[in-house]
Image (cartoon, rainbow, N blue to C red; front, side, top):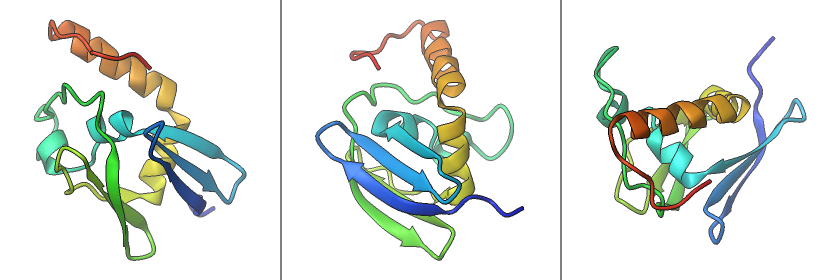
Length: 121
């Protein structure tokens, strides 16, 4: 079975949410902050396990542009200037499917670092 493919990608600028609908009937609303802190870029993920960089102060970030990457993904530009992550369809689907667990994991890392967020989700 092939990976789900998006049927529609809609950026809701006011609420700072990227809505993605897939061909298997799934629909996810992914906050821009969430997408930013889970960017697949080397700047965020590092070049190997344990090299991740915790992203902080991204509560107000939004997406200012979305560029297609072939027929397999998108490259968003975020309002903080970050524009190096390529979000494949599979990654977007997985981020949507695992949103609750990943978001709680991120909040735990922020707390463990002795930091706090300015706004809640």
